[in-house]
Amino acid sequence: MLDLLDPALLHPLLSLSDGAPRKSPEPEDVKAGWTALLLWLGLAVAVGLLGWSLIRQLRKTNAARDAGVYGDPVTRADDEGDDPDRT
Image 1 (cartoon, rainbow, N blue to C red):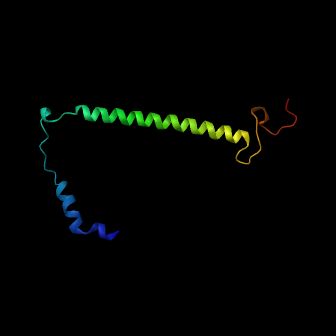
Image 2: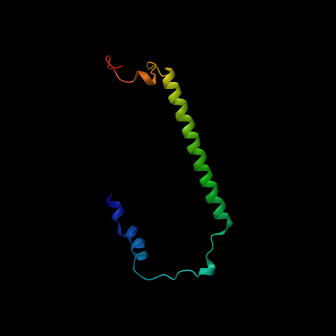
Image 3: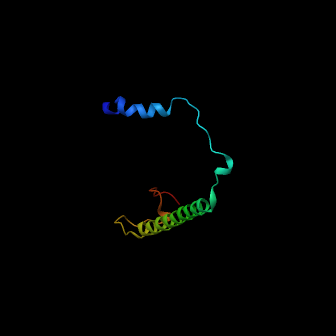
């Protein structure tokens, strides 16, 4: 941990934060482009597919648990609660 405080390692970081203003690029030099849009849309589709797959798998595991696949006793929705006097 003390090696992180070595001046040889801290000097480049301190020179970056010296407060000197940096020239920002001109607006005509910066453009997002179609590649970035397609990449973003592809990632959004991938996240959607992962969420859809997760929901399917969770439903399968709930159905398997209700069927007693995992060694637990089979439970039905109307068997919830241990009150024998319940009508």
